[in-house]
Amino acid sequence: MKAVSVKKLVFAALFAALICVSTISIRIPTPGTGGYIHPGDAAVILAGVFLDPATAFLAAGIGSCMADLSGGYFIYVPITFFIKGFVAWGTGLVYRRAISKGKSRKIAVVLGGVIDIFLVALGYFICETILYGSGASLASVPSNLLQGTGGLVIAEVLYPLLERPLGIVAEWDAEGTEV
Image 1 (cartoon, one colour):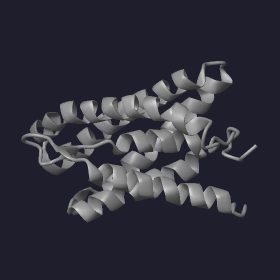
Image 2 (cartoon, helix red, strand yellow):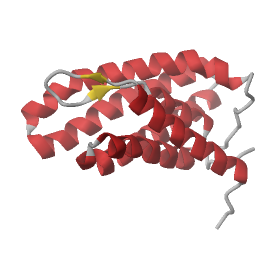
Image 3 (cartoon, helix red, strand yellow):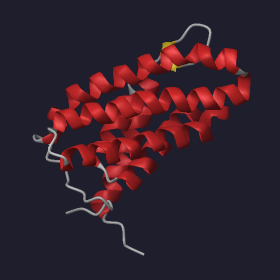
Image 4 (cartoon, one colour):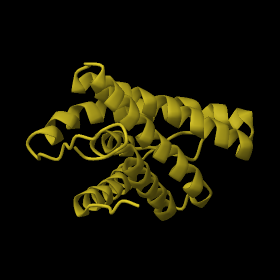
């Protein structure tokens, strides 16, 4: 088993906190669903970009489910952990693949954001169909698509601000090892 570097642990904790705070700080209620739209998806996308996929999964899952826990959305805690974790993991994989194929980093962030839009809408649709039925789950799809799109736009704006001046971009290989 590999030892986790302090740097990796600190970045994971920072992203988990950023995801939690950005999810609970600005809430735009969605009519008829009981949910809300928030900028937390931007931080989930950026976790996928700046962390290796496994660490991004944990940071996004923990940060997002902590927001649900603190907001009283108890039934969504495990659901959100896996959906947002897979979003960050998928974003990271798509981002790395796009970079390896010669795409620009900004395009790679957009492609990762598309993963966010798709997985959030699909993941919550499936889980809410099980919980509430297909009618209620269909009602949440537009707000989930809007939330994902907003996250993509915010992530695209924040990415260049975080990439160079803060120097937090680390290069990761396909296995998630820092190079």
